[in-house]
Length: 382
Image (cartoon, rainbow, N blue to C red; front, side):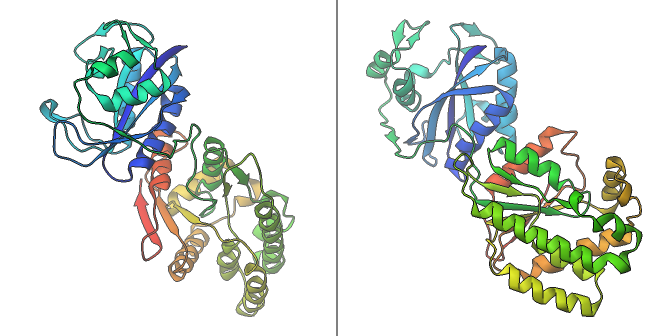
């Protein structure tokens, strides 16, 4: 394992979240995060722009310097930076990731210089370096970081912030419910998302429902007992799991929410059955914790049928496209009526986030950056 030290900077958008997102991607694409400096706010250097937030991070990596450069450039692109400054002119940017050191090597190529050429002349780099590596010896300049800071020509004085970046990525919500049609990939996404962010995972126990195979064989006969059993189980599971505070988890991620009981029952039940079902639902629903963010994964019917076929569940073989269309319309009609619900719709109909992890990471970035608008509904196409 090699030790690489990176400088991070941002002055566009949600600057703090940009830094936190960069740490998430560095952990995914570069290596294990070792140390993170305090965050400093500093004036833009070399141009008239917004104030920057800057930090330094050290990472244990197996990548070579050239590989690390490619990965940091990929992260910059994922976080919205289209290219490096044109003609080497400084500019506002959502994120900037510079390789400062890579072990004790000295490297000079057309694309990369290690140690970074500007370390001794940038206080927004020296201040955080002194915080975590005060006696680190710059093996080209033959001075420690403390010595370099006393000799720095930079007159800017960065301001240290009291808030610290999280070494492990955090979800900015206590409870996220991830929904979608049958075969949309909500469980697959929920599992990976919860793992990446150390969240408590709540999965729907649909495979334990004895009425489900019977329903697909005779929907009219088994619709009401199926929906009632699902409602009772969802209510009990969410009540139990959301009531238990987990000291080792920061958030809860569920691959369903009790709303889906209304959506599916509206499609499967008769009017009289649904009227009774709605009364029972309303009574139970008022006691449940509401999600801070409700995510709906949209897939078109053709992709849903392909996914259903791939997973090969025997009792799902009879599912038709018309039924999936009704379920989707039910979700949309319901979401449109929920004015106080923070809803994010991710249109993933043109991508495969399982086969192409970069699409998964784009979905994650949208979730981390999401803020509810006045209508409570945001739609993002991946």
